[in-house]
Image (cartoon, rainbow, N blue to C red; front, side, top):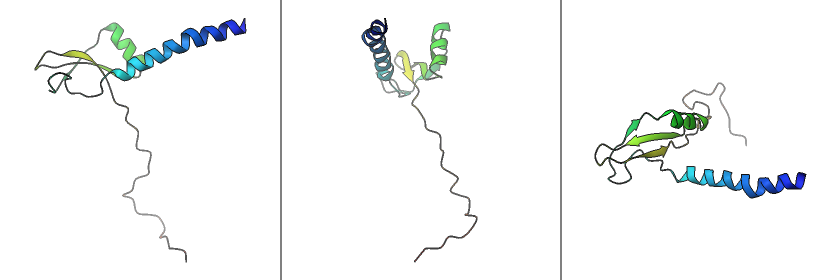
Length: 99
């Protein structure tokens, strides 16, 4: 029974996950139009689109170009949080170079 479940996972589920990940990475990350390179406007998604966007933590957006009429889905680029401490603060104690 275990061998059947492992085979099912490798043959179906893993390939499905890889296909969805590849399709997600193919969405453009630019906010400019793919056809005329103009600025695009954010559109409200339908019920299904909002659900998918929430499942992906807001990673998908529906955009429209007023210049040429292009409409499509884009993904929001991942932004890292700044985890480094503030560099503008003065150190609490002076440091000396060791000989």
